[in-house]
Image 1 (cartoon, rainbow, N blue to C red):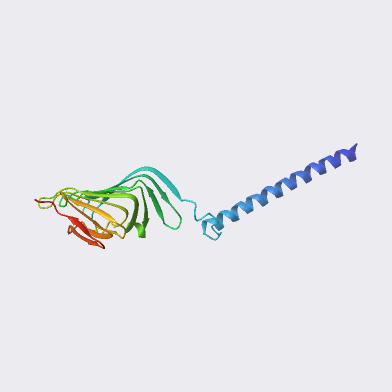
Image 2: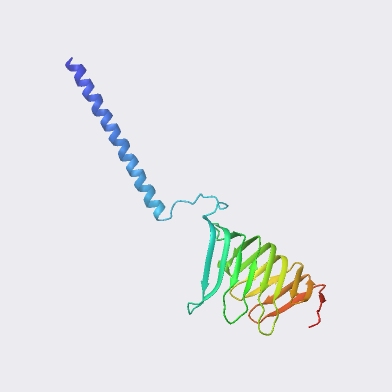
Length: 196
């Protein structure tokens, strides 16, 4: 009986030592993994096509250096990817500068590049500008428009339809500078001027 008790105690001690060894191994592996991951030494195996984050029902306001609101952005959804690409569903931008006519741009979707310096809008793109003292209201319709928000400039290389007051024009492409209110149309330009 003494031998059976001694064997049982030995087995229990051995089981406890094995459990302690396993716990120490697990703790050591966890510590090693945390050090490697905090230093960025482990390879990132995440899918580059999987988004970093998705946000719904967005409203952002951009301010100038003096703290005045310059423009406001709205979207149903924004999806950001690890390669810094941003995709936007139902984007809309409204200019808020008091010294210029209000400009509104909307589309079905957009892709943002270069930290927002270039925005490619596509699908039922519409641009409207409120009238100013010396210019009538303007509206533009196209299927793709490249916006350069910091420059307040817009370019399209696909067919566009423009209405300015009662006058209308179509073309294969255009460039519009909202700051100077200058529009250049290109390729098979057709215009219909209304009597003023």
